[in-house]
Image (cartoon, rainbow, N blue to C red; front, side):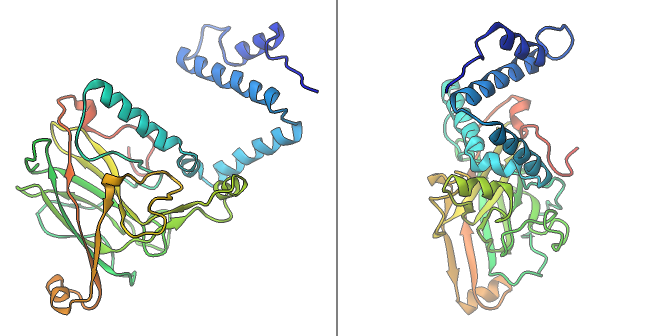
Length: 311
């Protein structure tokens, strides 16, 4: 039998007291948000007839999620991180911002302080321990009018052929597959790495456990993450997704955008391989990034959030 008591004076008072609305101390905005969350929670409990057993199962799930440090993975898998991008896109459209390379999700695996390459040379991302296909990528960072942006910072990171990231995978060397590259006088950057692999959520983790219950997979296509920044331009958080991946348009994190699909060319040309300083099969990507102008210093830096090794 349905029982709805959330509208009663006693429950309303309970939620107001629990969220701090009845005392002067504390943070008013946080109080309002917590009150909204509590109201919605009791409505869900009532409307969906949540049993005590289901309630405590959910509490334990959050404990497990935190212990496995998968909260960042879950919000991506439930589309919430992509929703933030959609919301920012809508705000940009309303404010008259247009053009430039699209944003997409950062994900939870960035590590601050990667080695800086600022002499215009080709940046080597991999430590040579992964027998993946060598990847050579080049591109240009441009302004809205197509002008090259010298001295722009290209902060790049990606997974290895097993789909894992340095720092989070202790078997990899520090900052493997992570670099910061300063563009040359013509806005060019060049890097050498290995072709990354797509990957899935840990199969024994709470994120995949929930996705299983939703009838969904937890796979991501092969991709490369970027922070791109330059003076007097808006900071860009984005990633390119490699064309041809079976999950390209079925990314569990909803990060694929058509403008961010990068064509990757594989070659067995021995002469061209020798020019790159490798033997055998290699791959190439050419991809340019276009930034939007902004005089606002707040927009020129990445949005604040807790990141590894970032003070």
